[in-house]
Image 1 (spheres, rainbow, N blue to C red):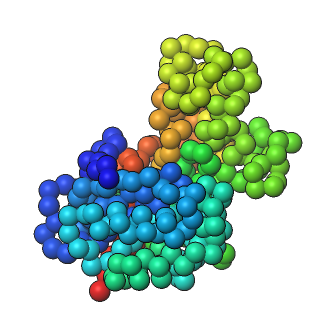
Image 2: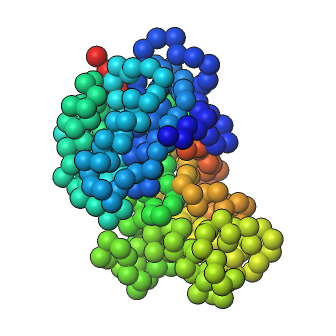
Image 3: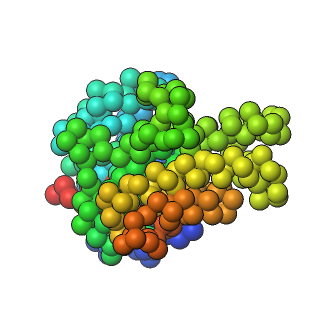
Length: 320
């Protein structure tokens, strides 16, 4: 297993050492699984990261997650999980999931991990866990309300109010990528609809649009597009600006509805530099109602450990 340092990213959660019991936070995604021990004050120890054996099915994924917890330097009193997919937090089941995790829908994630690890388990969606981590010890610590938008392979979101995740009536709250966007009018979305934000603002959408506009042939990663944009490549700058503007208009509209204390932007696309952040912030500000002008829109502080920390926060709620 490959161990990563605690608090990867621009900043990290509290460091030092846990003075008492710890809870394991698990972040289960389509490509990797990360686990770390987290103290009651948000202290984060060593993070273990392993590949997700998605092609081998749900049982293999769950066993890999349990093995990652066992590899940590201590025995947790509970486990919190942030998982890809739409999650029923009350029952601990995966309600639906994309093809990134074949057969994941219907998985009794809480029951399976509790059986393997012998401790209480709490389960939620990974973006919700990300937002909860940032609201606990990260960039939104001390704020009563935080809207997180995660932009990567898709576009997800989460609203945390007074330290509690808003799930909605069907556990489906947070699908920011599926709000209508004028920039996506007439374009098919992976959900079966048309004209949704994800079609123009997600990482794959930006990369595809860069190539369509005559970008450097053979470009395969969005970070290459971001580097080109910072170097003055006009197609790269135009594509990032267009995607960021579409996202910013949607985020500004959501802020007008929700009136959060702060908006956090995370996910791989958020690492695209000022060529992306500048148009994003300008578009958000242009949409805001007068009382919201100047709303803070910033990156998270916990980097790739955010969902681990937030998942552990869930675990502390069920710890024996």
